[in-house]
Length: 461
Image (cartoon, helix red, strand yellow):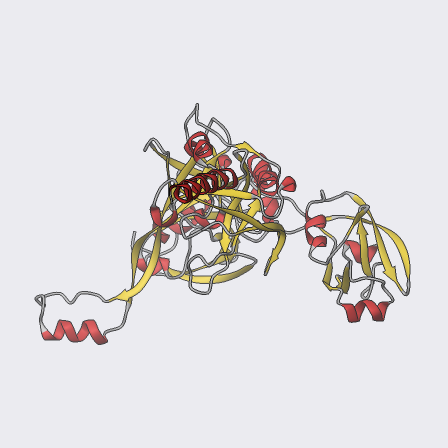
């Protein structure tokens, strides 16, 4: 009996020892890298149309007041909303990476470090196409992360995330790499790292570490039918994010190439019909007239097999290759056409911006007030005007008053007042002074890729 007990004890110790060797210990990694992870909280003023106006002279609880509250027309009211995210410090002087959707449209951004110090942050730039944003706090001597190489990641490798899910600062979750180079719907420029690390609201923008303590990605999205974690998480590879961050820091925008084609996947049936031996490449279904591909003689039904000497394994690979090419570069492309390969050369054009502009470090001064419109505006930099292909205009940075907020939004660009182009704050205020009180004025406002006139009634000032 004693021998049996002794044997079981030895087996238990052996099993514990084996488990200790198989399962990783994350404590040293968290202690070393945790201080570089930050909490990012934002405040935004939004329009709420659920309220109703008060009726002067009616006491609280009056039946008429209750009737009006229940059946009266809703009126817009300003409401302050808050959201939480994560980020991580990439330089000791206060540059921080996070997701663009974390800071999008924020009126105020606050960064809290692990030592509980808080700083007001400003957006250096944000890129919606990759969901990467670069923000800055005024501090020095900060702990920073070490960048790793996502290309060296292997499926099945342990990875770890640190962030603030649901506001719980410095929360640590771990898992493995489930896949690499994943494409998500409407996300053509990011070869996502798929993991089973538990990611929830508030984790967005936080780092994904390998076992060496190096950042290999930014936790960005989850796949969920319920809104909560379901075992599928996606991270932006850090090399993609850093390339975006470096461009944002240099110019406040990201430059991408384009060739002017519409592509689709090469299925087995299509490969057979075109005489291809496998399903690789990107099938051209349409060519933009006058675009780089059209000028190079590329036609619909061509299949791009190689781009700049690199094999196009699947159609999803081509947008990333093209986007990563500097506009103006001359690139050789290998095509499959009518049963044979063909080489063409084309010049890469620049992809237009997403029609949105954010305040950058070059125009971070306070808004100048346009009192009669109830807004604050800042003048665009030359770089932003070039990006948007406009000669003038004012960026709306602040909107006050319920009536105005229903029409104008932060981030809109005022292009003209009536038929007169708007070129400066001084000029717009000067013109507004000549217009009688209570009059409606027509503002030409650009929002995204479109511009339209909005009628605004002037304040009686």
